[in-house]
Length: 328
Image: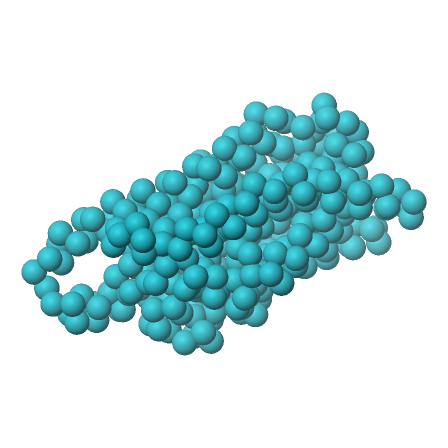
């Protein structure tokens, strides 16, 4: 029982770190356009992260909990090693201001620890490959939706003054930021729910036929909201100003495009990276102005971090698992 409590606590700690690591996803655009102060932005985002469970189902949590690894081989040590590996990688990327995917960090850690425990045959590769495919698809979907939305809005606003458009979209950004934070909470908080669900099964508390307990839902959304309130300012700077300069108009387009993408993938139960999604949407908003508006050198560095996240955390968590076998 002690180990069970430790693993659940570590998972909630990961969710807190996920919140402040990925808070940049929710607040970077609205802070960089100066629609809200940093403190106002994190409070706004945290609130909508928290209430996301009232609107969306638990499709993503079920994918993480039941669709990646054969549950009959999962032990508490496997889950613990996966979460510790994910926490370490999130802290490394946060320190260097790299907007990597907390989602893929957690998945890579879980998969790596499971393989270290029971071999390569324990993985549902079709589900893993689908998630990995969205490393590429999510940013492109976010980018194209953002470009399409920006194009429509440019046509609708062509007869208005620049000052009037800016004033209008400063107000509308409050709604687009709220919409994106809802999608972020719906997708990211559910990943920790899935891991805790697996933990409770491994600990003999639940069976695979049980539903995810309500206290798990509340705990994960609360942890995500607390983390968001802490604000990952290193990554906010990268997302909000280093990729491209954003006006309120472009910030609205990026946030709305990101929100629409997350709503669709959450409904389908696909645990996509919110980081990849909003990065693609920000690039799309920048490209709408001109290609040179995007700092492609920064973008290449971000993409490299995306590519190495899953294999690195898998190896790291496998190593952590081997260490835990010496202790437990």
